[in-house]
Image 1 (tube, rainbow, N blue to C red):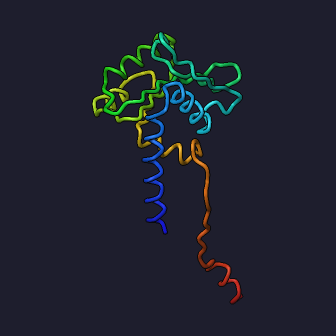
Image 2 (image 1 turned 180 degrees about the horizontal axis):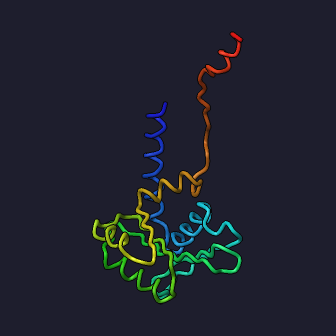
Image 3 (image 1 turned 135 degrees about the vertical axis):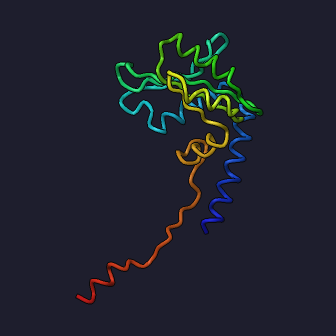
Length: 167
């Protein structure tokens, strides 16, 4: 059953990613804000909004994590087929520095080069990278763009229950 579950999720993830890639840019930007809110960002009374447009200086979304707006996460959303390299990440980090930001999330439908991944490990502000595979998995895990179809509960014997009979 577990193998079948993983096969179904892999197929679902693939379909999700294709639909996201086919969607308009504005939809993708709104999707990443919604996903991060469902993942728990902004849970202390904060809010999120997609702000991407021409001249957005590399920021596609903003999530305030508290009611006063003291903690903010800035988002970059790229619908790419290929690999996002270090130069794109550096542009985003520059946009973060321009806002004196400490946290950023860069989400792509593609993947990240090893150089880009190494780069974010060595910089301040902190930047999380989410590639297309992770994006689809998070969408499934947090029910964004999907709806549960069926649920099965697999049960096993409770050995402790039956051991109490002998007492």
